[in-house]
Length: 348
Ligand SMILES: Cc1ncc(COP(=O)(O)O)c(C=O)c1O
Image 1: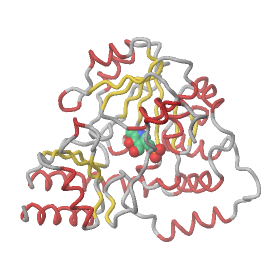
Image 2: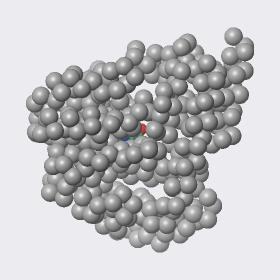
Image 3: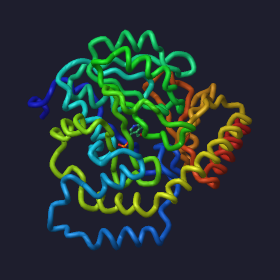
Image 4: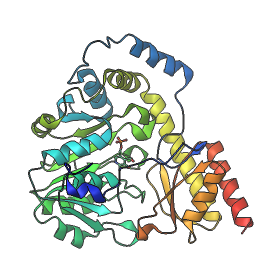
């Protein structure tokens, strides 16, 4: 059946979010708060007024303006995608040749999307405490076309300091360095490195309450954004996403900020309670915690799943054996998780 396709696909697995969602879903770094009823109705009315028999605005101008308003910058600096997943795919499609560099462990799509395109992948192991290994990354950047740094990083939760990133960026001027700020809203600080010719930023609405809309973006100098726009599919964003996201950004920005603040408060509480249970919790500037259970994390995740709580394990990554990634939930969800962990611990 697949004889027409790239041979390399045979050894790959499709990205899959596993099975039916558990009642308490702490496995995908989404925002735990549903949109309030009045906000839903507002978005529904805006979507209902769309002319769905027409193609959407292919440039999504109103949405780019709304994103520029929230993020800073000029609308011409933004290229929008169906999630940052599509932005990653666009960047890799635009590459002439050359390797793709990123630290490991990090977001799986950097590697998956590169491998699908048969690009050379250079995944550089993070040093102790998941900091950047500057020497190894510098070596890997030799001749590389593109580098991704998720900062804060998924799944480790830490932010890479600007001084370290700047050293890598300035040492490899021929490489386009993409700083993925998917979780930057939850961090103490955003990167100050935008403005260098070989730096672009990536962002998404997925972690701040609107994962279902599928909207991500690249922010780059207008000339670079214009070039990347050539590989974007026409009408890659559908009219409903464009409308709903524009309304969300223009009218619910204070709500987004409120959600982010609540996640940060809960993150601190969850972290100290998990530590009190004897787990090692890594410092996090994201909306999740990486936890070293110092035990059988897969078994623990399966037991939690039995009682309706989903957390993330990394079965294929020996470096993360024994670790769980737990998305910060609502207070009631976090309490349910902590209660479950206490009960499971006392039962063993
Ligand atoms: C670091 C990082 N970048 C990008 C994404 C993808 O985001 P989107 O939902 O916008 O495709 C994720 C999702 O988990 C992520 O962890």
